[in-house]
Each structure stands twice: as C-alpha cells, then as structure tokens.
Image (tube, rainbow, N blue to C red; front, side, top):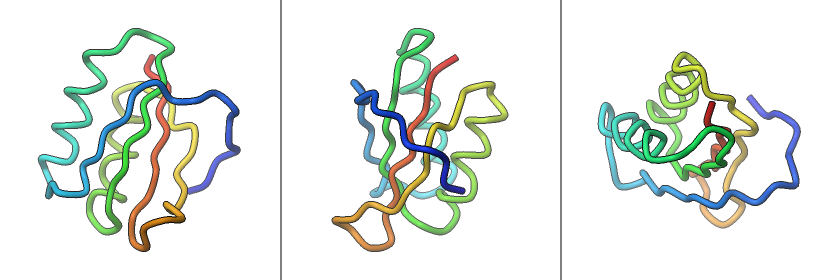
Length: 85
C-alpha cells in the first residue's frame, strides 16, 4: 500500500519496532490523541501484524494514511505517515 509521497515533513515521530500487537496500535493511538488536526505523524513499524493492523486501524479511526514505504535503512521495517484528522 504505497501512496504518493508528500513533501511535508512530519513533526512527530514514533518508533514501535520494539512493540508487539496489540501494543503497536495502542502506542500509535496514544500518540495520535496528543496531536491536533492536520498534524503529521511518522510511525516506524515492523513487517507482519503491525504492518497489517496499524494502517488499517488508523484509517478506521478516520485519520489519513499518506504513505507506507519500506525504511531504506532497515530491512523489514516500514515508515507509515499519517495526517491526523
């Protein structure tokens, strides 16, 4: 699920590569709740369940997934960019 990149830099970053489901989504949700509408959050997550569940859950919450791309510096890790709504 790759979407066009935006040129806006994410002001907020979250690394959940050391977490397992369901904590991956819980940590992401808590980070989103601290942000205002329109804020950009970049989440670093692992392949597998986090990659499947976190983007879907964020979308179901009504936020916008801007992109989901492999992290070039870490095989098996992805960068999820979210616009808070």
